[in-house]
Amino acid sequence: MKNLPKLDKQIPVEIVGAGYYLPERILTNADLEKMVDTDHNWITERTGIHERRIASPEMATSDLAILAAKSALENAKMEAEEIDLIICGTITPDMQYPSTACFIQKGIGARNAFAFDVSAACTGFIYALSTAYMYLSNDYIKTALVIGAEKLSSVTDYEDRNTCVLFGDGAGAVILKRTENEGYGLIDFILESDGRNVGWLEVPGGGSRNPASEETIDQRMHFTKMKGREVFKFAVTAMKRTTVRIAERNNLAAEDITWLIPHQANKRIIDAASQALGLDQSKIHYNIQKYGNMSAASTAVGLAEVIINNDLKKDDYLLLVAFGAGMTWGSALIKW
Ligand code: UT7
Image (tube, rainbow, N blue to C red; front, top):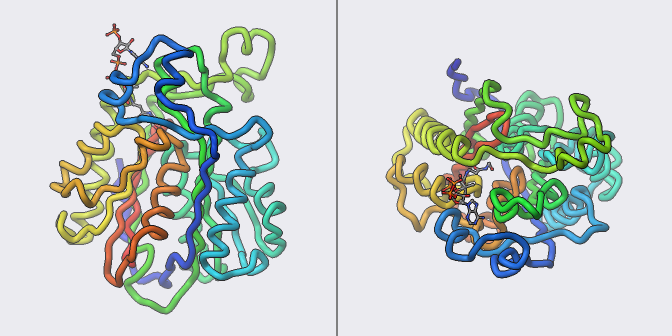
């Protein structure tokens, strides 16, 4: 795989606002014990998940995203009309088309923006951040709203214990702006994918390969199918690799990182990645115990939580890392 270059001499792009939204309904491990043959101890020991949030039937992904976006706008003290670009990282769009980003545009009234979705599964928010960064740092636009939002419960098979214990719904959003602060804001990305193992994690039905039909419904092809063990092994290697590489090429040691904000698929995967860097546990942002795996929304909510709930200081380093279906993986480094 080609090594992408380190970002250099671009116009600085900083985060000026953040917000998130989690649905109120909580699905606990005890609830799942009544639905499939599983138990709380297995789930917590194998994954670290205690509960997850589930959106109500009338809410689509864009509804979660709109609430996160409004909260980010409020946090940035900005009006929706000031936004030039909306990118939504999601694999659970409201519909096949139009894009969820256009529903979000309508919902918040961002009439001066152009809007589109990015599909990179659990790495979707990092891919979306990097895409917005390219427009901003090349002087094409001034502001962008970047969202990671998922209603994974809409593609989860609550009869399959291998997957139904893992996923939850939520949305996180940040507002990016071009600034004058040389060396601050989004300072590096590593983006990678390997299409050889596309079949390890997928929703096979409902697309142009297997359009929705009685047969696809009968075979439950509209739900997530996952080869858990294969994904797990791949994830440990990919997460370790991207975490260590982005730190090394920015001359950062473990003690220089203020917060590691990893994708929340499995606590064991997060711990393996952080141990590879020698990072103290207190520097890892976990929300897997409360929300489970929210795909693109996991890192988006994690970043927004870290920004909102901590008194970040100038020169703090935030490191986002993720992997997901595709397979895709990557990292983003932010200097506050
Ligand atoms: O967001 C990115 C994508 N997703 C991931 O990153 C997930 C990656 N994979 C994983 O996190 C783990 O592979 C899982 C948590 C999904 C599964 O953990 P594991 O330690 O790899 O378990 P396993 O699949 O090897 O299964 C071990 C046993 C099996 O029973 P047998 O065959 O040993 O008798 C499973 O049938 O655990 C059984 N099992 C369960 N038992 C109770 C699988 N799911 C459950 C369950 N409750 N929910």
